[in-house]
Figure 1 (cartoon, helix red, strand yellow):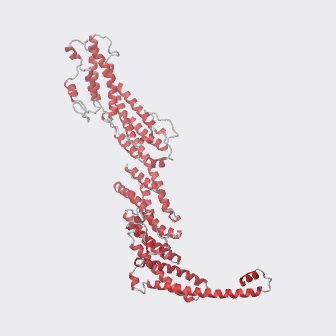
Figure 2 (figure 1 turned 30 degrees about the horizontal axis):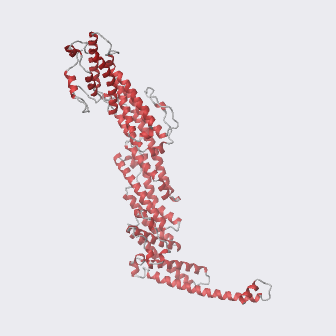
Figure 3 (figure 1 turned 180 degrees about the vertical axis):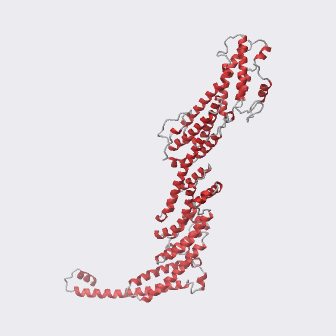
Length: 636
């Protein structure tokens, strides 16, 4: 009952026995405090002694064995015990500092042991980083399976089975990498907790920066000035750009990703240390990497290939932009993000400038050479090759062109045959820009068509070149950029050109026959019609033999259109009046062609025969019909 009595007295200060009870309680508390102090001193001494045993065992200054042996490689269990002892020693030192009654000799001894331990851990940290360069290279770290996440320091204290990475499917490289990262984290945590973070960071930065710098060097990234890049021949610069594209991919997938992962794992307990290490290790190399595209964008190289190399570099950075922001997310690495962004801006400006140069090149083309047979102009071929390749970058160009003001139509030649389409405010900027570039090309082709003295040939020239444009649009990404309506409108223009060509090229042949081919006429009139038809057809045929229509579909459409009208008209006249001219001898004299002959001769056209007796590029021309025409020149 004494505890109950004491409790009641304590809650009743007015009781006479209160002072006696208080004296008794104070005495018991003093005795208890003395016992705890004695117990604490005993534990402190035991902790220091235990730490001294393992720390001094691995003191390289006093032990030849410790000098040539790695603690973490020799015995992982003993290494973990070493770390645990150092952590306990650190706690003990805090107790000694806070306890004014503790002897300074113990604190001095603990401090000496701590310095010895830190010296050993620095050596171990350096050895692990150095000996595992192959397993801690950025590629190994960046591809390390998530199943092999670094072990926590507490889970490693239990037994050897828990020290081994789990999962038999983990590769040997991943296992070694995981173990090395875990060991480094244990040491880094211990040294940081003990106040030696600066020394740990110094070792880490030196070794890891050399790996990143070596990696960038092996990838071919070097420091160049703007003047050096400007002086390079295009072939040399082109090789460097190709190399950069591969280097950027490897750097973002392995080099910087792996280094960020390693920093995050080793210094997981301190964001400040993590940031400081990664920034000093990677910042210089990353700025060097992302600075090269800006130099290329600023060059005055005018090779047509430059556009596509610039777009490739823009695409590489923009596709990796999220990774760039994630890997270089620290405030101290903001200069890397800014450099990558500056390069994107410069590259986009270069693209716009190159597009304007392309347009200007088309407009300034001053060649007056007429293409034989009204065929394809080299400007048409080269321009459409360029535009179809550009269309493959439609996603990138959409971003670049989105804010670019639409072109001014006032720059078009006033005499242009095609009327520019009405303004379409809803059309995407990229569609407007590509349509405009093709419009500029067609304007230039129209001006070139005027150099033909034969007007019919100028229309055939326009039809051929526009058909080539449409064909390239249909077979490339241009069809998605320009749309079906654009294609339909321009196909109608091709038909308009061919419709204009036919009466100009074959009008005299048609007019040589009466409007009503089956109407009765005299023998003299019939003979005169046959003579005129023979002469006009021969003349038109020889002129049109040199014409060429490269597109097989368009070629057949033109021949069918002419043949259907002409053969039908001539057959009606032939069948009605062949007997009118007289007997068989007279017929042979005045009638040189049967309706079938006309169809056969027409089938030989538009393959581009350049001179009489020489064949065109097509093997389908009927040699029999050619020989017949050459053997029997028509009499007029």
